[in-house]
Length: 278
Length: 84
Ligand code: SF4
Ligand code: SF4
Ligand code: SF4
Ligand code: SF4
Image 1 (cartoon, each protein chain N blue to C red):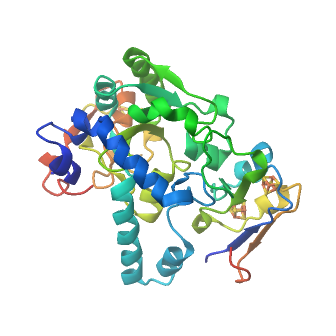
Image 2 (cartoon, each protein chain N blue to C red):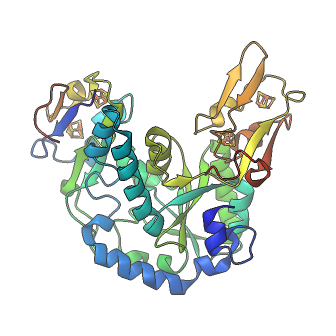
């Protein structure tokens, strides 16, 4: 079982379907923590978009696996208490829009950092919950302003972003308080990049694993560009798409693109080798 | 091999409107940050934005960023040198 469902699921199918994890009372905890940690809490503080320092990369380069492991655990431990994410499918994201309120469309801090993207081109991120009512206190975090959305409008935006090829994921701000629904891609999303390039789990895999039915796959390859996690490739000799299930993050983007319905999402928990691979 | 990449903030004055190095880097190494913490009720002034090589583990040493920079603000070195 997913650690977070076990700890914070409280009988709900997923921890992010448990309304208590969006509750205002948790926001207060977050506020104290954030203010106590000062400048470091600024997502845009110098180099703040990267979670690791040179010591980690140097240890990795000289093959010091013990040191790599030590730093990795240190970073993960800190992030899992404060700010980390988990991949969810479009269906799950749509369901969440009926659980939490308010929902707002905001600019993406990662793309602002990695592309310097102007605000009007950068509305791909969703903030939610009590904290959003105080957005005007932090004009820089919310550069470009905030558009409050109805649940139906939020569903429309999410569907559009999915079409564009962006991965949905849900983020804590003071775990287990959930306040971010991000729509991300590699390499400019700090969490995906850190998970994929450095194998540091700031972003957890989702509850599904994708699987191709070779009978139904006609080799059109239109799913291949959808994967942001290096899990999907194409096998020319068989003329079929290929999914590395051990690498798959379960975002479902490949499946929503396949008009042959050749890709299905299976429950991670149903696969013995993957049930505990997050 | 890991490079040492430095950006001279005195020369790079308003990276948020320039961002040429961010866009040209083939492996998206460079990113924007700020040299001040979060400020209540105030947008951070563009002059406080800075460029850093946040993902230097992916730098190939192609020097495109060095060559594109109109202010000659970026140094990329693979022989040690100043810490970033
Ligand atoms: S989109 Fe569907 S049919 Fe086309 S290659 Fe992918 S799995 Fe096969
Ligand atoms: S294989 Fe499909 S479901 Fe798995 S990570 Fe890639 S796009 Fe997402
Ligand atoms: S190209 Fe030079 S001046 Fe422009 S943002 Fe990059 S470092 Fe600054
Ligand atoms: S030298 Fe090339 S790869 Fe390295 S940061 Fe500059 S543009 Fe990117």
